[in-house]
Image (cartoon, rainbow, N blue to C red; front, side, top):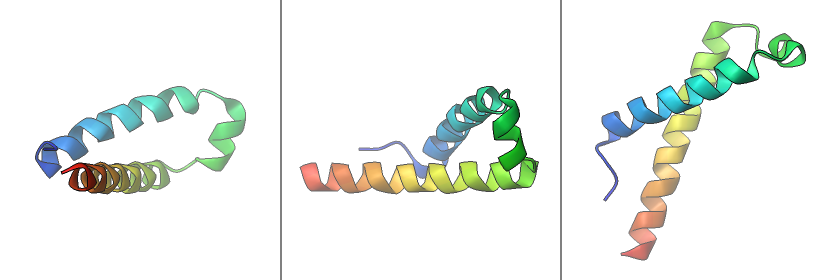
Length: 62
């Protein structure tokens, strides 16, 4: 079964944060994501969505 939700969200947050730190080194990307709040909100939404998708896949396999 998937790890505890909070633990999973913490791990996925670190992964997405690392991704965006590399992504934002591109000048063109920075023009679209110029607010730390926007990026943080996006990371949180992606982490929640990923958690729900994995949870549904695991439930389907059981």
